Image 1: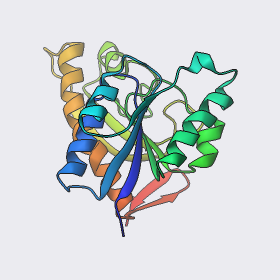
Image 2 (image 1 turned 60 degrees about the vertical axis):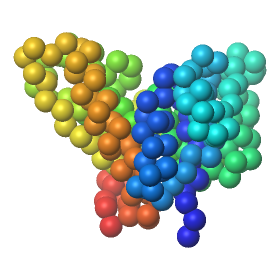
Image 3 (image 1 turned 90 degrees about the vertical axis):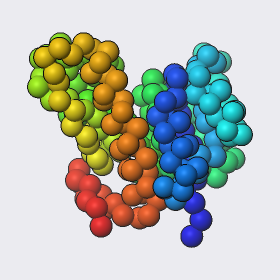
Image 4 (image 1 turned 180 degrees about the vertical axis):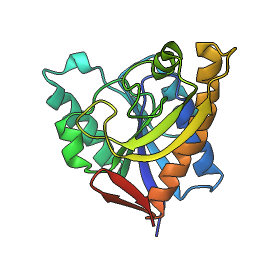
Length: 202
């Protein structure tokens, strides 16, 4: 059995992309990143991919007449590179019908909070503002909602009295870089079973 072929969608600096590429390059997961896509021409994730010799492509959503048309263009890229699992790594757009139907339960995301708490943008800021004692991060399957899909794996990060949003975000990011490759590894090895909203290791 070959390596699981990953397509990564990113909008920003791509630190989670880097953690995935590092884990794949070191042989810690039976997967490889075969294409990186962004909606943002300035995303450093594209540069990370190019440095690693991975195709890095960008499309401007404003060039398309609808979200469906835009996602069909993304889908062509993913199919061209024979992508088997789509990984969102700081991709700042809600995934729509076209991609969800093309990759059922084969799109995953990392979120910097313990879902279902603090979905959407700035999960670290939301948690810090609320005054929680523990925050963390979540890898989950993507569905039609915002950070509402079944949870694959989570990591808990304590919130210290002297934390700032930035220090909390940095410690959460450290855990993101651990659990995202781990989740991909479990999928690559066929060790996850989805039953309704519940995800089990097998």
